[in-house]
Amino acid sequence: MTLTVQPILSSHANAAAEIHFLTWKDVFSQWIPLDTCNKMTLEACQKIWFQLTESASPLLHPIGIFESNELVGTIVWGQPREDKAFDAELYSMLIHPSKLRQGAGRRLFPACLQNMREHGITNFYLNCIDANIRALNFYQKMGGRTLPGLINRKDYKELRIHWSIT
Image (cartoon, rainbow, N blue to C red; front, side):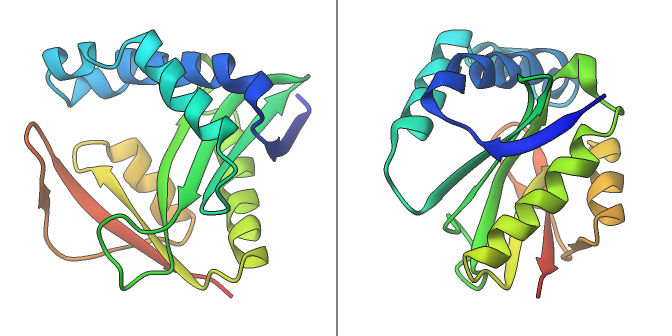
């Protein structure tokens, strides 16, 4: 399997939206109430990804991993939304459910770190659903450190994981 990493362009928005939608439907629905997950429709995801990819903002960085020119995963980082003590926040990392555990995440995450370094980022955080053990283990293997305490959302709880990068 040949994997390549590159910025996500507007021509990839529909594929990114499909990954987003399927991840919510197939993966996040294990931990987030179904009525909340059902609000994340394909149309809602398309709107998000067209806005992301058409934005000229230097503050948003959508990056994709492709297998034979087909988008199989996304990662998006930008300015911190909650914790201003960090340079950046990793908003989401989504791998197509049919491509999980095949190496796409292990290739995409370090590419994101490199992209952050190129933009002068020295530390960042992400929030992860506390029950998502597979993701928590992945982020730990990628060098993340979990901060103490839980973040209470309306329908679930999250842990904050941070990195220092040089």
